[in-house]
Image (tube, rainbow, N blue to C red):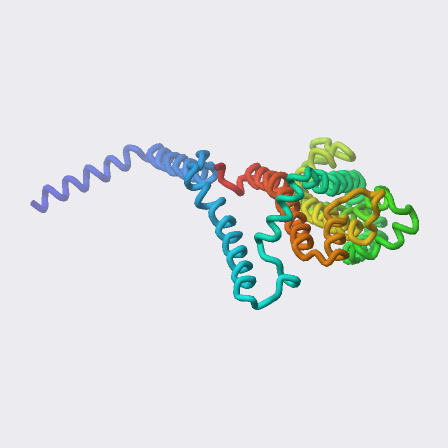
Length: 313
């Protein structure tokens, strides 16, 4: 029995000596191939379509449940008479005001008056804030001079610009757009500056090596790499645009300006109409959330997905 084991070990040793370095190279090649396959599997994003039921349970049900709980708590406060109707109207009273505006045909006009101003003002802020942010980020002297001013303007409440804008431009749409620009441009520019600061220097060196300098390097290297920070600045810029517009409409309300959501809120205050006040607040909130869901959330998902940070659904 011992002799048989000795013979088997001798044969195995001879086989190892026969294969020599070639066998070792083959084994190392197999190991390397297995490692590369494992890394490829880790990098690969599995593309699949999420079932409708999972979408409803994961994305639709939670906000619907939250809204239901808020309405239930609201109605409970009213029903328990912890407060009076002139301080907190019931959800049904707000709903009645919404229905009245709908049947009168004024609801969509009021919403569109504010939304059109907000979107146009935001686009103007985008056209100004983007090149300003690039210049501040890329030119050292301008950065030292202008960046603190942008940060200061970003912290200044937008409502502070309404009185001087009225005195400068009068009660018109130009005044509204001026307030929006003063509120949104610093946020967009600072967001782009922060995004550019986060671009790895290796990207810039590689771009220069390949001939991507000047505007070409900005378009093909800097802007794509700075996109996450830039998008965050755009979201904040829209928030400032919307809040600036509401402040301008509330303070500088006038029949010549038309009836927007801010004017609707101010009219409710002047008429001591609490259902009207809460209706205006609700519509302002709905518009802000809708713009975020329809515009900025898809853009954010696209940016994350393009960088492999979000699984396809």
